[in-house]
Image (cartoon, rainbow over all chains, first blue to last red; front, side, top):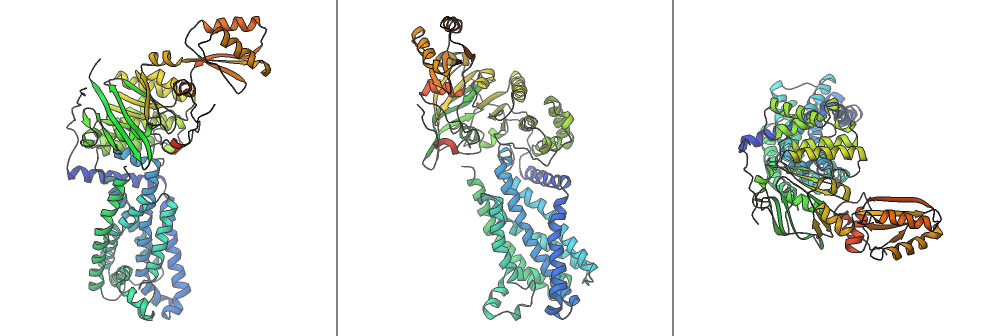
Length: 267
Length: 331
């Protein structure tokens, strides 16, 4: 038997330019989803707003002597913690699309196989920027003294870069897990202890020795210190460097694992 | 016979662990025709479609789609295929228009062209009025039409339809059939999987019946119906006590037929137009009153009973792969 060969049309744009276009189109889809479901933005603003109000007005006095001093300390930490929690939604979204058959459609199209994942991660950066704006805005209303506008912009940029890297942990969980709930449970079990055993909410010098040893290397400590340094007070250079080192290391390990798991889904 | 095949498989095999989902399947679809793949849940239909659409890779065997190997040349294959799966691949939050425009943009169309193509497909699929509504507000039939439209944005030459009408009411089913006929008239090759003999009969030029991952019969709808007694006669006497009498009468008059008694009725495959009037006369002469005397196209169940001597399980909700092991012979 011989088979008829179909002439492949040349209209497709090959190469990296096309892939970037596909990633942007995937991100566009996520933006349109928010347009049709704006409550999603309210939903993801509620928990950082509550955390900020409760931490400052409930714990603040005891933690730092005054709520205003604690606000000055904790805002950077809460922004760091929230950014890490937000990456969880990348995994749950991918998990839902995988199960609903949307990715089957994508994989039957002549597009880069990484485009759906990359597009989702990229679009979720909008949520990161949105969240930092909400938290910083509320913080300013509560009397937060911003170190500099340039610092706020650099903090946002740093946060986005860090989130881009660690999102791959969430992608990996989203691809491997068989339900959204499981992604949430995994994420919660990892993120909760990780963010609390850091400098995000308290001075790590008050912790017992073994905990300090961990808290000093915890990536959340470096991210929280960077945020605090850029937005409020304290050193910037060293925590910023360590934040990027951690981001690069996490990306280097989890991105290939996530892509491999994603390809394996195509058995 | 033409050698101009748009789809060809040779010994196509897929294992999931110990489960053999597809077992040395040889099939061919001539360019511009519809190949109907008929089988129950768990027969391996979805497994086959996923491999041909390059979503998964065969354990053994080869397949060529549009002349390209599905494993080596997957990227080329994807430039001219379309896939509508069993589970809707549309985004429920997006409107119908946005769903189609999104695919057009992904395929590299400029925004203006993607919009125009979306409008064109919405009109063709009778969805223009719902263009600005989110897909979650669509009825089952509308959603399937949108899903089919989404697979056509790039004008595929070869289309895979995996149970496109399962769960649809007869009217929506008929509408979808009309759309598929239109595509074929325009030269598209279609591989269609279905659980309904009627659907395969309506649309397919060739039918392959598969069961437990194996092809158990192939032919044109006419050939297949001749083989399996494409029509089935259902006789239900008013008095259940007369079931045996009816069966004996049938067996006596037409010894070749194999009447089956179930659920208070007698079913038999028939392929001779004379049988129905002859039986009607005999039953009247015996004074047997009937509540049902109905000639219809055989169901998949009856096809299987004829081909394999056993019935399919009728678990409509089961996943195609998942149900493979649940099948149990009845009788």
